[in-house]
Image 1 (cartoon, rainbow, N blue to C red):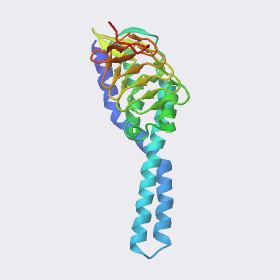
Image 2: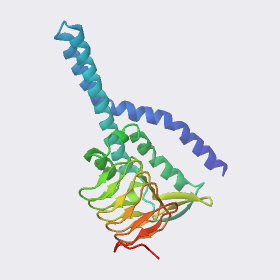
Image 3: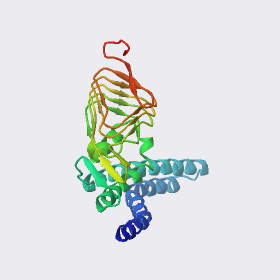
Image 4: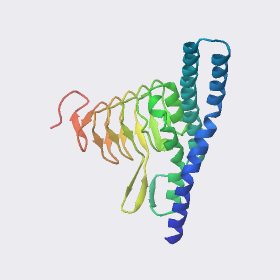
Amino acid sequence: MKAFIIIQNFLTALVIPIFATIIGFTAIPALALFNYGYQISTSNTENYFLELMGIGVSLGLFIMAWGISLVIFSGFMAGLLRPRLAPGRYPLQSFVTIQWAWSMIFHKAALFFLPNLVPSFIGNTYYRLSGAKIGRGAQINTPNVNDCGSVTIGERVVIGGKAVINAHLTEKGELVMAPVVIGNDALIGTESIIQPGCTIGEGAVIASRAVVPKWTNVPAGEIWGGLPAKCIRLADGSKPE
């Protein structure tokens, strides 16, 4: 127990310099772009307003280039270093949990800019690099797809803004890992929460702000809503008894 706490505190202290390194490293191409734009802006005009405009545009390009580089690099590293944990329960105070938490650093780094890149092919690329299986035409409008290596999103799925997809939870002193599968053409509403072990059937709809409890199987075509989420419309359009 004491050794665990010491290692946990040590790794926590390392987070700040690691974040600084990630941010600095991914800023290199953006700095090169800004420097190029800045030199052009200050060397080819004597008009102060045009010079400021050029610097401003260069600064905007720097921010966008840095953000995209940060997200793509974080996705690559998250996928490369993610723990290959089988579904199951693991002691919360264990080195397995530390490994899992450590892998989440890159997702936290990506969150500096990822909310500005969803939905887009860049956001989907980040999730794929992180380990998620994503079908064609999926629209992911949230930066909160966690545990990507345990998440499968089918074709033409729409995930609303601020929805949360979790393949993990903690309970009774344990880290619980269970995959989440979302079938083709499903709709996950705004600010809804999908918990570990859930399967969302093809064409199913999860209403906005609904919370789907862990290990829930939502049949194809049904509409679920509420807290906790329950079936409010069957696949044939009728209401459940």
